[in-house]
Length: 525
Image (cartoon, rainbow, N blue to C red; front, side):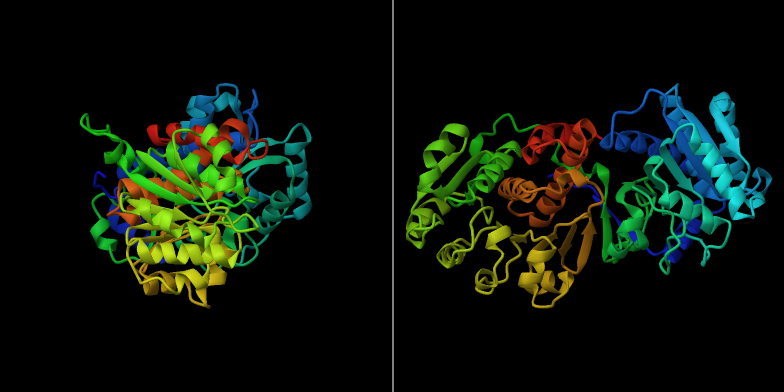
């Protein structure tokens, strides 16, 4: 894999304030350039993310909530980008204070917006003049009585928010949070009111766009209700400053890191030079998991795929996906993989680059014993998922840096013995891929956060697909289990985003994801 930086540090709010002060050094034009980058990126991301709900309306109406600082400027420039892209869009601009009380760059962003699309902008009396809650309610009711909003952009507060939130702002937060007239809610950098010590008065978002620097409050699971899905907008702040934060334990993956997988295959390559994976999966009652995992490994570019499955599945599976080499193995009476198949499995392992197991294995002790004995014999890199994540299996493994474990929260609780994810990864020397709304990858005391993905992935089979993808990448790059994990998780999440934007989050199959792996890797989005 090509080498370039694939992740940036996640900073506390105080660290971020200090970094930005040092980075910009009071240069207004440099700040203005970054603000334009952020605004354009937010506008582009929001336009794509709105499609997860529905096709963009012909005349979208955007509510832009503007504070007096740089977050307000980002929101205005995001609205400008949206309205430039969609000539039929209209915006309602609701400022918190009069424009002459805003910071200079926020005022500049406002002038830019009005100059470009002023005829399509409606302004609302600023919040500072609406001291009574009844007046505030009347203004909001008037805004939504004609039609709701296709989206809102929250640029009221940034990381310098002072708590508690007081009236009339607290009243506005409450009204908007309870409203069902806003289709998609976006927040610039942080949802307004969210800080490292935030309470309940936060303006809820469906998508939060972390601009330039990802701050610690957005990755806290307790704040997920407020932040919604996360997107990291890399503005290149750390291109020349990464060494200043190389010891930071919390990291965020860059969107552009998938470029590491975008290489032409060597003209002299053959199937063996693109990795050989042995996948051991499935049972008579959970056959689909094995097929999904195998299909994902094939789609992820594996050169050779050998799949050990219960013998009763062999004929149908070989007919359905002939690219794989399907190995029929003895079954238990209940349809699981029997220990009797160990010798046959061993005969294949000498020629493979990586091993993956777990999807669809079931709960039988004999099957778990087969996995345990196989792992004692095979010393190469391996991916363990789902039913292979058992204490009876893992406790017998020697610590190795070639092991990738992919539990969701419930599975991790089963194996962790009260350890934290960081402690567990460090003690076992494994790469721990903790699947969740925002998947975290732990290795060597560092936690890498993948802020991509979509809730379309919250369905059965999604994890089986990830296992196949990780197995394929590990077989192609057996010396790089961490990089294989980081890139596999991000690729999986990116494909989920593209799938949701094309078809929404509901009416899809988990396996539809496979059709978007190519687009997700070949395009910078």
